[in-house]
Image 1 (tube, one colour):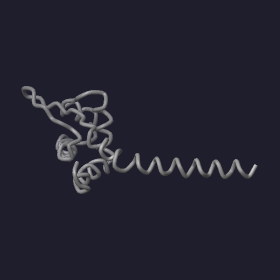
Image 2 (cartoon, helix red, strand yellow):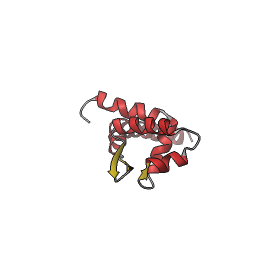
Image 3 (cartoon, helix red, strand yellow):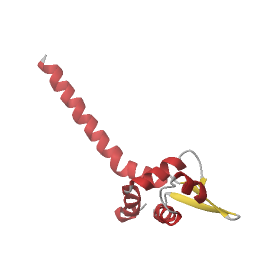
Image 4 (cartoon, one colour):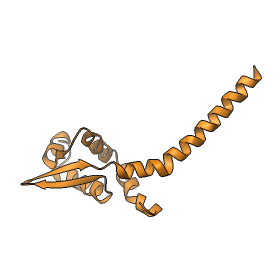
Length: 109
C-alpha cells in the first residue's frame, strides 16, 4: 500500500461488525459463500454477498471459483500494513510513556 488513501477501503471494511465477524470466521480457513450464509442465517444471501464485496474490494478476502462454488480466502496483509503503519508506532509510544510513569512512581517511594 503506497499511499494513505489505499488504506481507506480497509478501514471502511473493518468498520462494520458483520464484516469483522466474517474475517474472524475466515481465520479458521476458507469458506464458501453458502457456508457463510448458513453462519449468518439472520441475513439474506444478498446482504452477505454485499459484505463480501466490500471485503474483496478492500483486498481482505480473495475469492476463488471452484465449479459452482466461490471459496473466500482471508488475506490478512492489508491488516498487517495498517498495523505496521498505525498501531505498532502508537503502541511503542504508549509503552514508553507507561515506562516513564512507572519510573516516576518508583522514584517517589
